[in-house]
Length: 188
Image (cartoon, rainbow, N blue to C red; front, side, top):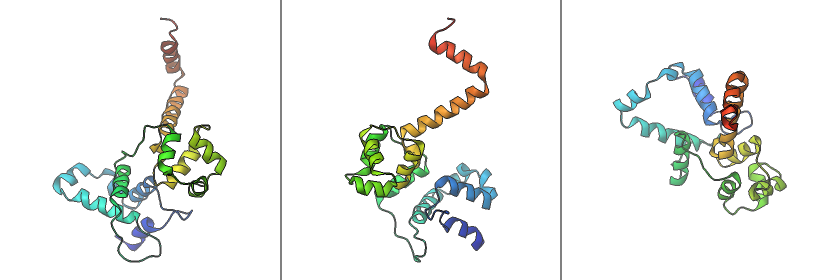
């Protein structure tokens, strides 16, 4: 592995923040094309400790502070479990956004939340009270502030699914006619 290959993963994103998991995966596939078709099941079957080593390295890499040399401490157990759930694509909540945001906020003041999530105080207050429905950008801001993927929120997942359905139906209008008729009970 060349130093150039490794620099891609340790460099922060253009905005100075850490790279998201999807962006890291894209970079891994670009820098190491053989990983695209890697048979992970076979690899894990042949080396039972491999998964543990990979997860430990990912969790420690997530603790890296640019410009600070030296070994990284293991993350706190709760944080490590949260990161592991993200890695395994199991970090979701089923509560409405306002309740989920309130749990994440953990008694922080509106001023603290405004700074943390990068949204105006009035929007933060309305989101937490359920007065305002969150936009995709607002959900992404809150998720990023708490080290989560926006899909953590049920509204984000629903919007992505609904968008995919709309694209599919727009691309196949005959399908939309049949579904519409079934849903509203026309022609039955």
